[in-house]
Length: 339
Ligand code: DAH
Image (tube, rainbow, N blue to C red; front, side):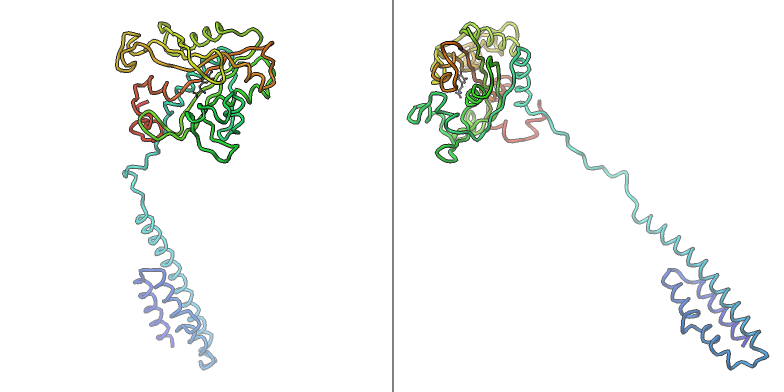
């Protein structure tokens, strides 16, 4: 019996020695020490051993068991360590691989120009007002002296949501909203998106930007309009710029005008940008029509005011020499990266 136990021990130890994985170690443990393991079977057969030999054999079996358990544990630990290192080695991160670049966005030239314009007017004491892009027909047309059959409606053909709701064709409705809700005097600008059902080409986009301005107080005259807009032109295009006002017609101002500025590319000499004239059209303006004041509950006998409206896209295109409005709305980074 003693011989047999020694044999089992030697065999088991050599098997454990050769094991290369945790699974193999476990297999060996089951083979010798498991419920049906070789040592367990010997322990169970103790009843057949003679009473004199029993204590000795029992002691030996327990010793062998202890030796095997100790060895199993040591080898299992060693193998686990190796397996962990292998796993780490296989999962290693190659820090020399180029990473994914997070692309930084850029300020859009429209945004830059709008900020520039806003700063100039805010420095002159103007507030900034907002209005909805989905607008009531009443605010977009009716209250601005553009009744249903007015030809200006077809010039500003828009997207109707229903008979009463339109995508605003101009920022001018914010004039009406401001006059309705604010106490006087008013001195505001309102930049924002406007919509017209124009076909897309180099100078037309169904979405574009405008900036409205409105000043209402007692005793406001055309001289105030000229002074304000001339100062704006100087701050926007430089001290040397000259301005002129041409008579024009808008339904919501009387008298109305368009303001031109000397071309900031050629300083009035005549070039490609100003088409040889030396002048560039900047904005529409005029004295607020008495009918519009009345529509907003303001007495034209007591108050007067002036209004103006820019096409912001046009300003951007002129400023940066961009000849196609579509570039402003295509989000092509090759274009936008230049600003
Ligand atoms: N709303 C006009 C347009 O879209 C621009 C304009 C002209 C606005 C004269 C004004 C103004 O406030 O006084 O063509």
